[in-house]
Amino acid sequence: MKPTIEIPVEEYNAMKEEIALLKDQPLLKKVNRLVELLYEEKYGLYLGDDTNDLTESSIQQNYTLQKSKWDDV
Image (tube, rainbow, N blue to C red):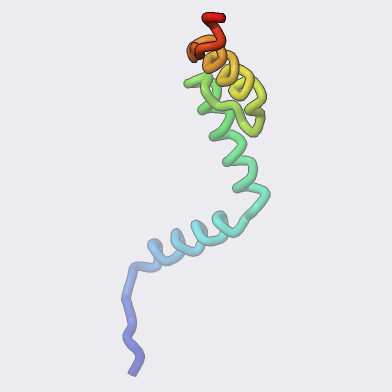
C-alpha cells in the first residue's frame, strides 16, 4: 500500500499553477531582471558585472594610504 496525502482540490490546483510558473523560464528571467532593476533603483548599489571602477578606486586608495621608506627619500 502506497502512502497518500489528501489535500483540498483548490490547494492542488494552486500548486499545479505554481509549478507551471516556476518552469516558465522566460517569465523567471523577466522577474529576475525586474528585481535587479528595483534593487538598483532603491539602493543604488548594484554594479552588475562591471567592477572596473572598484579596482581603480582600490588601487588609488592603497597607493595614497600606504607610505614606504621610499617616500622619505
